[in-house]
Length: 605
Image (tube, rainbow, N blue to C red):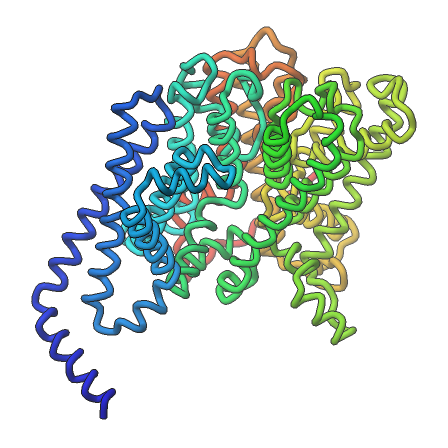
C-alpha cells in the first residue's frame, strides 16, 4: 500500500515536471560546456603561466563555482529523472564524487578553512592549501571527463567511422599536448618553438621516444608530467580510456565504440571488447605500479643523491615509458647516464616491462588472466589461443636471434670493457628495445653496419597487435613467412600451430607490409633531399625508427631541419595509428558487382 502511494506521488510529480524537463536539461548541457571550458582554461592558466595572488584568487573562485555547478547539475538530473533509483545506480560513480564534494564543502563551511589547514598542519601536512587546490582541480578534471563521456554518444552524428574516430582521437591528443607544452611553465627557458612542441607531443602521444630537445634539462617538472600523461594516453589510447569510462559509467558501449575497440585491441568479437576493456586498464596500471616499485628498489642506491620524491618520480616515469614502449627518459643521455648505465638489474626490469607492453593486451589476458589460468587448470585440454602462441613464439625467436647476433657482432666493439653479464644484459636489452621501445643503454651510432641493419629489421617488424608498440607486427611477419613458404612448397593451405590462416589475413598482411615499405621509401627519399648533410644509413635508420614508433636514433634527431622534422612527425603518426587504419579512414570500400573480369595469368618472379 505504501509503495503504491509513493508511486502515485512520483507519477504526479513526473507529470508536472515533464513539460519543461527537456528544455531545462538542454540548458544545463549548454551551461556545462561553458563551465567546463572556463574551468579547464583557469586550471591550465594556473599551472601554465607565472602565478600572482590575483590570478590565484580568480582561479580558486572559478574552480569552486565549477564544482558547485556540477553538484547542482547532478541533483537536477536526479530530481527530473523518471526513475530516481535507477538514476542513482546508473550514475553511482558520479554520485560518490558529488557526495565527497558536498561533504568537503560543508566541513570547510562549518569549521572554516583556516581551522582545517591548522589541523592538517598539526598532523604534519603543512602544505595542505596547495594540496587542497590540486585535489579540487583534479576533481574538476574528473567531472569534466564524465561530461565528455556523456557527450561521446553524439559522435555517431559525424559519421566518420571507427578508423576516423581513432585518428581524430590522436589528432586531438597531439594538438592538446602541443598547446600545453608551449605554456611558459612547461620549459626551463619559458618558451619553445611550435615545431619542437609538436614534435615532442607527437613522439610522446605515438609512444616513439625520438626527441629534438633534452627531456631532462629543457622541460620543467610540469612539462615532464605532461609528457608522461601523453605517453600513458597514447600508449593505451585515449579511445580506450573514453570507452572504458563510458562502459564503467553507463554499463555498456555502443556498437560503434565496440567496433573501434575490436580493431584496436585485436579481439575476436564485439562481445569481447567490454569484457576485457576493464581488465586492460587493470593490467596496465598494476604492471606499471609493480614496475615502478621494482625500478625504485633497483635504483635506490644509484640515485641516492636525489630526494625520495625525485626517485619516485623517475621510477614512475620510466615504468610508464617502458610499459608503453615509449623510450622517453628523464636522465641526461637516457639509460646511458652514468648513474644507471651499469645498473643491469634495472635494465632487466625495464626489459620485462617492454615485453609485457609489446605482446598485446589480448595475449596478456590470455596468458596472465586469472580466469584463463583457472580454465586451463580445470580443463587440461584448453590451451592458449593461436594468436597468443604466434605472438609468443615470434617474439621469443626475434629476441633470441637478435641477442645472439648482437652479442657476437659487438662483443669486441661497443661492448668492449663490459663483463660477461653486462655484455649479455646489453645484448638482450638491445634486441628487446629495438622492437619498439627505444631506450638506449649504448651509443646506437657506434653499432657496426650489420648490427644497424639487424636493428632496422627488428624495428620494422615491431611489437604485436593490440599492444603499445608499432611496426608491422609479429603476426604480420609470421603470416608473410608462412605464406611464402607455402607458396614455394605449392601448398594450398597456410598453416600455423595446427590451424589454417585465412587468405583474407594473408592479403591484409601483404597490404600492411607493402604500404609500410612504400611509406618508409618515400619518407627516406624526401629526407635525403632535405637533410643532405647526413648519411643515407642514418636517415633510413631514423625513418624506420619513426615509422615503427621505436625512438632509437643515430644521434641526428636534434639536428634535423624543420621540413625533416615534419616528415618524422608524419611518419610517427602514421606508424602509431597503422597504415591500414589510415587507408580505411580515407578510402572508400569497393562496392560488390554481379560480374567479374576474365582471369589473367601473370608471370611472377
